[in-house]
Image (tube, rainbow over all chains, first blue to last red; front, side, top):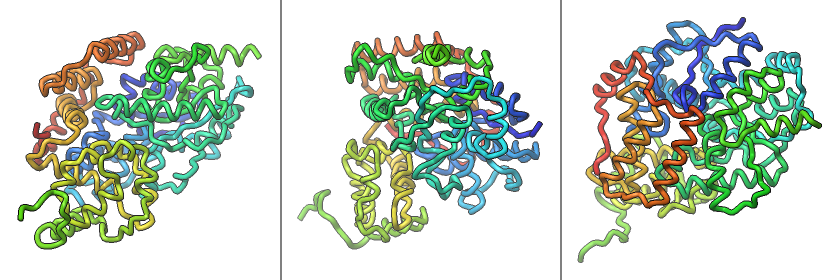
Length: 286
Length: 200
């Protein structure tokens, strides 16, 4: 078992509990021991830096200090948290803000999706596939936070990220190339400014449909919520016909769970607005 | 002659402000040659009253008042397309964010009050529990905008209620907030660093 400190973030505790459950189950299968960091706190998301940039540096830092006290590399599942943690560390290293916790920068901050897409992990994934998803065509959607800006994230593939596509391919599915991999879904703007949020999500859903995908694979709780929860309203407002049954929005970990034949992962489908159950039944029937 | 807001003044104090922004943020605003890559890559520039490249220009020209009163800085999603694609390495998103921070420090009411109010209630809930609770976030946001004079239409109310019910049915809303044991520590540190809210 490889031990990692784990920062779930607020979304995984409530709005995206299915992501959390699928991570727990898939991690066990892949020999990862994720140890939740004690007393973790919210990273501040968009709100903290919008009101006061210093808050956005200070808030994530406490979690980095906790991971350092465990002495383990920190795996992060939520892209927003991942970026805020990286940003915080860089600003503290540059001494832009006083560091209340005297960080040593001894542990690595790892994005869970990218970690699973490293070659040794992909090999393990391939070995664990019991139910190859050969007839499934998907588009992978990365959003903003795990790719931009490259200076903070530490990867240069912002133009065409590949890691989710590699995971999808490893379980036998066909990842379709499309142009909207890293186009913003609007994050939380849909709450104070609904029409803006809906228009951004609609653009993404249209592009995904046009590509011929049967589902969208995501790694971000906020992207999942936006793309999934707004679908009924978008159907009403932008007038898609009744024939459109909706596009399931799945986390990469849920895709892995299905491919590993872990029935328990399907429990999480109850949280989805567009139920992916039908899609997998249809594929299984082929 | 009385000066209007639209007159561009490139002298005196206003010019100093541009330099102060560069000094505070480390962003070399003067490097911009108006290639428009920021505005072209921005997913929401069509919704902005002043486009990102114009904002950079107006900072160069010291138009502080105009910028602090524009809605564009609040519409920005912080998706960092502009920052990523700028050929002159100007951190445009950080520049817009700096302007937002400046509004918060001033007496100016944010041009997009609801967006600013959402950020503010987010920080309130965060300080209270150390973690986010979506139900409390939404409740507080609705109350805040209501007390600021936003009366939701009947459609808006029924949409909100039906979404809340769908979310509860799917166990996506927690009725009781989860509290981090470090909540008080966070609150103390934020106070020490002088965190304050939005003026309304």
